[in-house]
Image (cartoon, rainbow, N blue to C red; front, side):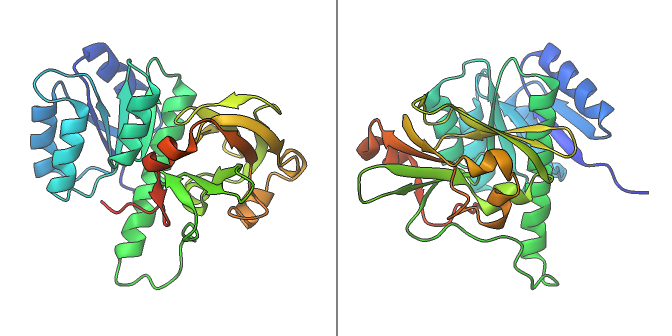
Length: 265
């Protein structure tokens, strides 16, 4: 019998814990919980979890402090930050400091399950990469001249001042086959850390891609609308999604990671 994936939800609201436990339990996951970060830390120190979901705003120790301690202790479980205080700053900071995803409250079943399934697949890929028995290349890193926000989205500054953005190969390896891509409109303003594109996959789940920079869309890669598989074949070049005129590139580039988007926990 296949072992259930083990999740830990840390939130000071029992109603949120009950909701996540019910929704993820219905998908066949084992869910453990803690009402504060200190209790959650004790649990991760004594038990291995495949994924942690942690709220930001909690008494005594907030989600960012918890994330920092998890990194210091080299706990391997990937972590998703969630909050009812959804701001650009919180989203970007979460990804910069090591969370693999950011989930704003209130969230839908589809939003929750999509980030959970990506997180579990991300963890499985990381374990495979660390395995002594694994010698194959499981994904392609971002080119050295690119920047990334978290592990999922990339940005590439062009000579003319525009910035191309897209999804990383590692992000695409965490989702099923793409059946439909939903793009923002030409001349739409997109915001760093906010959703900019959606991918509907064959398992009937919609996955959200966050924008690595803010700006106005001046070009869309229309091929995604007729050929959804394009992005998986060449995510860093022919599979680019938008070209944007950035709002504040000097400031926002500082929020990005140069080169590879891989983050090992």
